Amino acid sequence: MTSEPGAPAGGAMTHLRRHCESVSDAMAAAAGDDRAFGPAELDHLESCLRCRVELSRYRRLMDAMCLLRETSAPEDARLESQILVHLDRYGHRWAWERKPRVAATVAAGAAAAAGVLAFTARHRRAARLAS
Image (cartoon, rainbow, N blue to C red; front, side, top):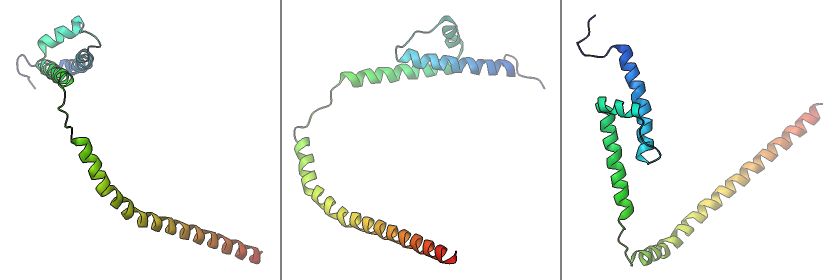
């Protein structure tokens, strides 16, 4: 079994992937300005295309986050009043639709509890008569 010239051997590929994982963690920290790259990580970035692409994506993401932080969202003066009108219009209907459902749930729970109590009382009475 021969490999292509210049292709890394299996052990070298595993070592490269492990190094990519450690550099990936360093890139995440460096993107958040928590720390800078070390010399070994910089050497790896020079030779690994996949890690350079990932670093480029981190940089673009951080640039976009900075732009979002600097721009302000336009305020709509009518938005608050529209929300309040909508809540007034539909909020009361929601309460009336929910009351029967809540009442039915409570009634079913009470009936189930009464059934359990009746069953245990009957079971105890039968056990007392049997002994």
